[in-house]
Length: 81
Image 1: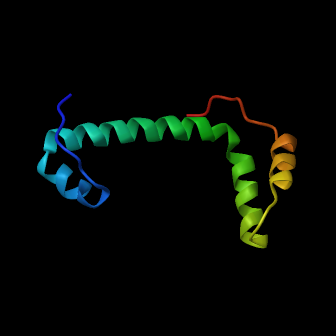
Image 2 (image 1 turned 180 degrees about the vertical axis):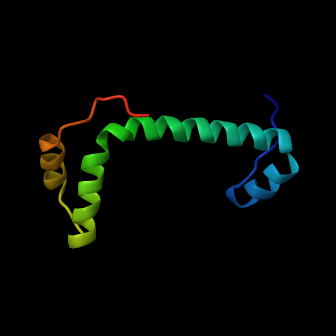
């Protein structure tokens, strides 16, 4: 790996635009990691959707309410495409 200097958050876009090889690597890594996160969250989708609905309706939930909802929700362990 080659150190290309300190690139702050404001300069990342222009830095990657001028370093196409690095930009491709970053894009590939982000895509791979995004897919991993999607697969980790997929079995929990019913509880995530329920929490989202409650938050939309009430605007707030306590940690205890979230824990209770998670404990009461069956996690889908099936393989879905």
